[in-house]
Image (tube, rainbow, N blue to C red; front, side, top):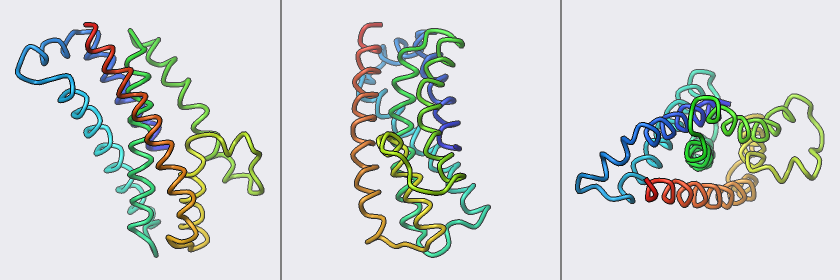
Length: 179
C-alpha cells in the first residue's frame, strides 16, 4: 500500500509538471526527453523503494531474507512508477489525476486484501500485476520461503514491471514530445 500511495504522489507531480509546462522549460536546456523520462523513472523508484524499506525495517519484516524482500520491493517500486507515469500523463488537473490514479490503485490493492482472507486466490486475482508482489512478500515474511520458492513470483513480477514501466515510459514520452 505504501507503494501505491507513492504512485499517487508521482502521478500528481508528473501531471503538474506537464500542465505547468515545466517539462518544456527543462527541454529548452541541453536535457533530452530521455533524460526527463529517466529522471522520473529513477526518482519514482528510489522514493517508492526508500519509503517501503523504511516501513519494512520499522515493522521488522526484513528478517530472514532481506535481499529477497528488498528485491521484491524494488520490482514493486518499478511497477508503480510505470503506473504513475501512465496516470500522470493522462491526468490534466487534480480531479482527473485522482481518477486515473484510482483507476490503477483500486485493482492493484485487491491482492493485498486477499492476505486478510487466506485461501486460494481466484484466477482473476492472480492476473493482477501486484499479485506476485503480495504473494512473494507473504511467502517470504510469513512462511520463511527463500529464493527458490519465491523465484516464480519474482519472475512474474519482473515481467509485469517490464510491461507497465515500458507502457508508462512510452505514454509519458508521447505526452512530453507533443508539448
